[in-house]
Length: 114
Image (cartoon, rainbow, N blue to C red):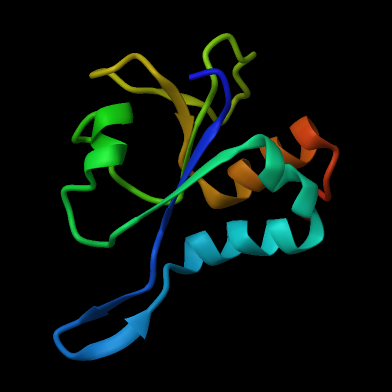
């Protein structure tokens, strides 16, 4: 991957209840309200709530299907919050605040308050 890829969940219903949204994905969506230009430089892929989440599994392996997750472009200097998939070797960030911090630093957007 030449660019960073962000996987986010689409809203869903469950057992006739909902619709629901992912609160952690909402945090990242909130970042984009304040820093909309960052969207342009990312591949943002919305996936269904139900597992397996094939696109995420293809990128990070079955053990790393949580969303939101930012798969870092190859050759990126890895921040402290980055993890590495044992299945694919790809680096990623799966904490919403760490994702927002990385995007804010990388794209010159707002940063989460410490």
